[in-house]
Length: 146
Image (cartoon, rainbow, N blue to C red; front, side, top):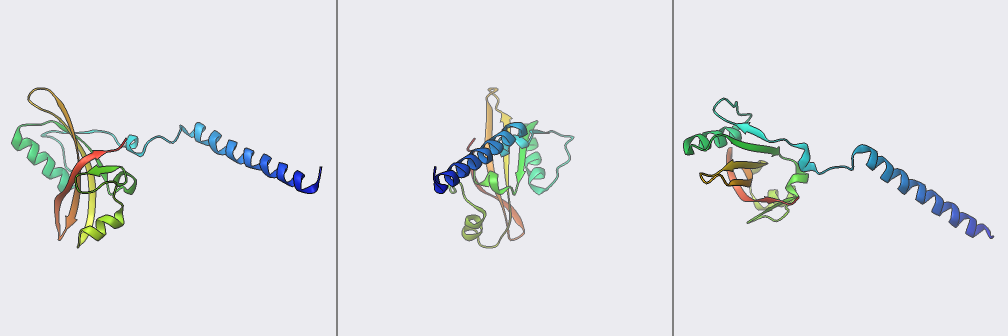
């Protein structure tokens, strides 16, 4: 065997070891589950203490409608979750897209809301809230791509 063939074989062996170590580490770590699985549903009822203005609005709105309890997943300003958001106006936007399309955007947040209708049907809505000019507003509604 020539020197070039030996170097090529060593290179292939090294690549196989690196790839094997990567997948072995990933398997030991738990497969690297979805970023959405890291968040738990939180129950909002009369006794819940909101963490921010958006949660306070959700609680007040549900209370006025007589829809308590509702359940939420507040993803905050997680860019990975934003990349999974598919709404009516935005389809998997990035942070730069939100900034470009919403002049004066100071912050944003994604919240999933789960509730039951009067007919006991479960509804899950995903809302993109935007903080523009010192006020939170709903920027878009949609779903999260699982």
